[in-house]
Amino acid sequence: MSTRSKVEVKGFEARHYDVLMNIVTLGTYPSFLRRVIGNMGLQEGDKVADFGAGTGRNALLMRKHIGDKGELVAFEVGEEMISQARSRFLRYDNMRIESQDIRVPLEYKGYFDVVFMSFVLHGFEQSDRAKIVENANRALKHRGRIFILDYSEFDIGNMNPIARYLFTHLECPLALEFVSMDIKTFLSERGFSDFREKFYYYGYVRLLCGKKVNRDEI
Ligand SMILES: C[S@@+](CC[C@H](N)C(=O)[O-])C[C@H]1O[C@@H](n2cnc3c(N)ncnc32)[C@H](O)[C@@H]1O
Image (cartoon, rainbow, N blue to C red):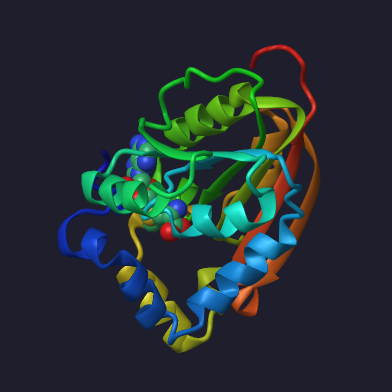
């Protein structure tokens, strides 16, 4: 993994990831996540892939929408994250976590209705971002949807001073580059269209949805 990235979460931070997110966001994270996942329009029975799933917290919220008939497969590389997600999923037959690098093609082709990735894409080099998005495209059904929950596009220079200080000190160099990336063009070059977006946290965070429109492999 590039030294410009902080996307691989390990040790203390991994073991206490959910609590730390609640603290950093001054307790707003649980309601934010419920709102985001409610805004995705998941349907009962949907098959969902969660790329870089972390502790499985988001997956569990998505399960409420897809129900017993749906299926959720989480993909993760972090050992501490995998073990937390695995114990969260134990009581559900239709949820599982696979140890899988999301830059490497998955076993699944045209299988999922939805691929979700939350605060994952910003932490990769551009060539790896392309691999991840192409991988998501292959794993999705035709007209399946990709959801990217991550930093939106903004000018760091125009941030309020506190937000700018936190963002530039807590985040990695790749995230600082990510916010100036035209992600819709990036996705449309990789088989996605019909974009919809919702913004949170004063517009600094976005849930972006695109539909897979290609039938052939990318
Ligand atoms: C910032 S965390 C976000 C976790 C989760 N998506 C969330 O929103 O709570 C990024 C996650 O991506 C995982 N990750 C990093 N590189 C990965 C890779 N190459 N393949 C799969 N997962 C990866 C990390 O282990 C970590 O759990």
